[in-house]
Image 1 (cartoon, helix red, strand yellow):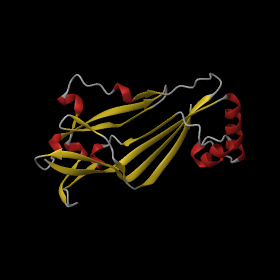
Image 2 (cartoon, helix red, strand yellow):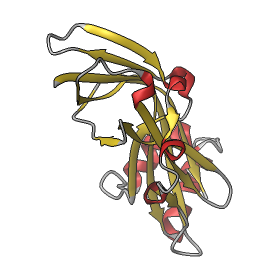
Image 3 (spheres, helix red, strand yellow):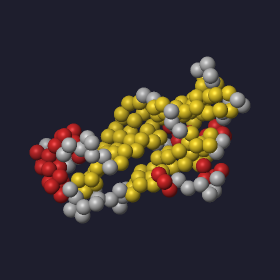
Image 4 (cartoon, one colour):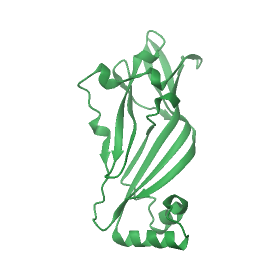
Length: 191
């Protein structure tokens, strides 16, 4: 058996959610008014500071974006040499291999707990390295050896899909190291 390192590159979706109460909503509205904007993204740092949201995340998810055409896999041998390369759209959905598999565990419905409060979702998209993991195989891993499952984050107004898990020959792969990437966009929503 040979050991291969699989590096995953492309777009990554990062979600952070926060519950805020009615008094917090008033503070947010005042920040928006003071800055003459309705764009939460433009004043996010002010909101985060004023409400001290840094340690108040309810949910934090970091997953590869479901846009498989911009996802790539680099296969490295034990010497660190590249021995294969393929794109995300070359791999298949895991339920096509295992019809009984359900990725419901990575399905998140976000709702405000306080009817007078709100939920804030901060969505960032990063580009570059995502993560790497190791697989064991007699042969050089090929695209057809891999599959993926997807997850959701949604509320009453919108939803986002992402890759939840990656499998190699039906075995779940766990990220061992996260790779460097750059933030390309950030959007903040309040519902």
